[in-house]
Image (tube, rainbow, N blue to C red; front, side):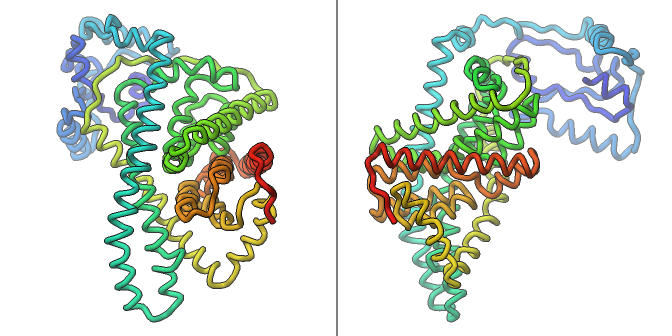
Length: 481
């Protein structure tokens, strides 16, 4: 790749990252000689440890200040076929690169992760410890209770709301800030008291898996299952990321090789891959009834597999080949995990906070104009066919704007005692399968096109409603009007 870039005359700096791992494996690279043969600066670095960052900055500054591209010598001619480029690369690397123990996979843990037993145990460990205990029980349970229930619910919000109510005189403005759908009482509380701890812990867990080298092994072990539903092992990475944020996952489907795979993956994100906050809240809601949590998981997983199997039969195209590099397992750097988590949280809140503000304003206006009750009346027949009370109409409206927003509304309804256990299971399932949120829908239109996105949204809505009616019948719930 470096030779291909060089033949286009681009100004380059070659940064050899992960040199800490290279040193541990006994890899030897003669940087100065490599720089001489390529005619460009070559810098050794370990960015997670902070090594080499200043050297990269200084080199970039020097090149920009000189306003020219330094090349001491010209590398061997790199024009021609890929085979010729590979041959030229081998000539350049001769006598200056020693792989050491890099290709030695004698480590017992690496061998164990490549066995069927090790692969299954690791998947179970990640799902149970990472998602259920860490994100579901700890974040959605303990952290949410502390932040939303104690810090915001008993200290911060009562103080702010009391001050604003005494200060504001216009009722519409007062409702906008401290009313039922106010910016503070709803938007701020949901964003920082409920969503933030769950999304933050998920991104931390994802960065831990990413930096440990586990994700490629997960792709390796899920390839056989993915092929049965028209995808391959590489698809597990955007699917896993979809558990963090569906909008981000739709964007990452670009790594998939065919349009057929991208459409299948996008449909699955919209239908049955809950975002981290939604997943954490649903696990927290259903954790007191483990049987309900198991039913929810089985129903959503079955629909995901069935939908993917149907789509691979419906959509034309051939199965793509699967190939992936398996890097060595390594000990993650807490500094790197913190930086990745912080960067993803910043991205998430830049996207989500404006939406929360707009949703609060929109709902407040709907409530004050009476249109919110009109929307509720329109949705009541559909909810009634699923055996759900009219109060859930607002929750489903929340869910269209943000899936996590809708789940937070479901949490509020459950706390108020308006739902039975069976209704909670049904509502959690249908809300999971419901329309993708507004941001995800916009990304679907951008990536897949308006027609495809509209067909996916319609298909997802039909599956969600049909599942709700069938579940009502099996749970023995009456039709409500």
